[in-house]
Image 1: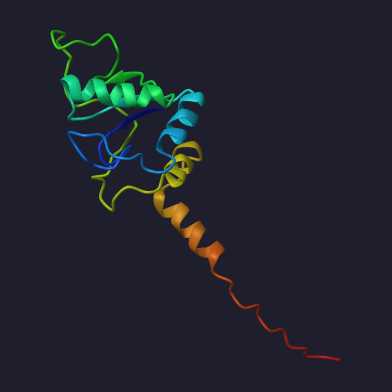
Image 2 (image 1 turned 90 degrees about the vertical axis):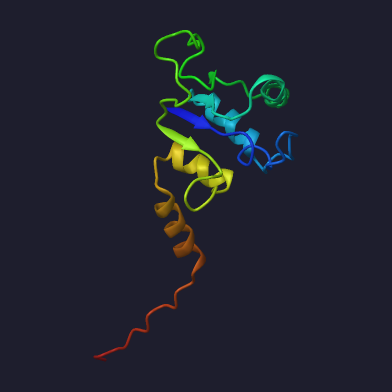
Length: 140
């Protein structure tokens, strides 16, 4: 699966142009997705030195992206197909409608191919202890 991932507000707290604190489990989850052979594309407004700093920050934590702000590593601005809009199967971004799920939920959504709704319903039903139905004896 090709996954487009934002940096500020998604992997780290949004402190642009500084790098904020890591959002819990972000890089651990990204490393697990890489291990499962997903292609991660960093999709960010950062460029120049700010982008270099973000990439180095990720590398120091064991996260190497397949591509950055492009569909594949060899794509260049001079190439006819170069665009800032990347092609991905899913996008992970703090600007999603409904916000950013925690990284454990994101991992489950990708690896189990479940919707956010399905996972939330599972969590709700597992947290609720419904009372057992009373059974009445009709005979005997």
